[in-house]
Image 1: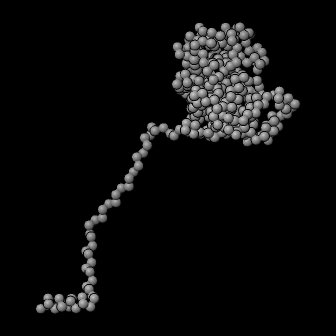
Image 2: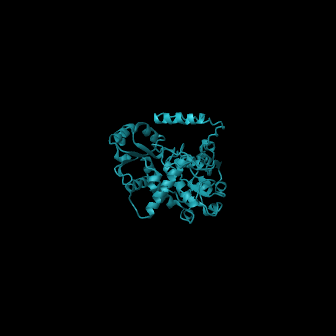
Image 3: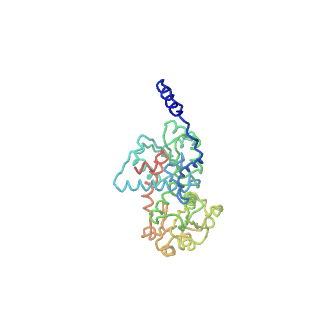
Length: 365
């Protein structure tokens, strides 16, 4: 009876459109599941090398001092790319088309000046050449006034060689152009050191760990200083040798070995670099005669045999045959002196290209 009444009541409510409220589900009293852990990216191994530097971060090339090993390697790798282009008989590339480069040489030069001019032409740059006899310097114009007049012509780069140490640094403070040091006084010659390093690396496959002997007029050599900075940065072992009167006292503070005996310097060397006696910079009295110098410090075939069997013989030029080097050695099978000249073009192409904002990655593409 009670059940029937309930059914009738439910029927009436359904006919009227009503319904009973739905029963609420019982709350879930199970413990909540722990949130899933976020995925963790795998860390790179600690031994993974840092990304390779592809662009030169300097506006000028004033010297090798202060350049890092990565920056030096970048220049050498870029030079290798340009050397490979040259082997394909491609004499000209348009990388610096529309750029103007001034060659401002205030000292005589054969290899460096010609090398820069060829490098600039192969990069399709417009060049302007100055020399002391063709400039207003002979009329008494100062270096600063000359530089300001050059700047008024809006060149992109100035390649300078000057007898005064620090002249390129002076121009860098007063000019908007890129400044490249092609040799300043007794100070530095960075592109020579770079082409020397390029030649060594091409022959030996590396720079690190090599024993490099540098013999000659150490007092007046800008090539020496640039090579010391570069070779030490790249991990080479450097020993220098010359008469006591031609060895600067500060050399020992640069982390190189110093000896007065050429046999000791050459012993076991991977590379022997001879330097010219710069009589034009000497005041006299450094040594009794060129004959005595040759007997004590000249590189003869007998002395060269003290080096490693695969030694390479280098000289930045110009050579004084029979003074610092014997002709049989200079023209012998271990000499790479002419290869240094050849490599100078590729290295200077690399320097010009990188200072103009080029990158090794773009060149490779």
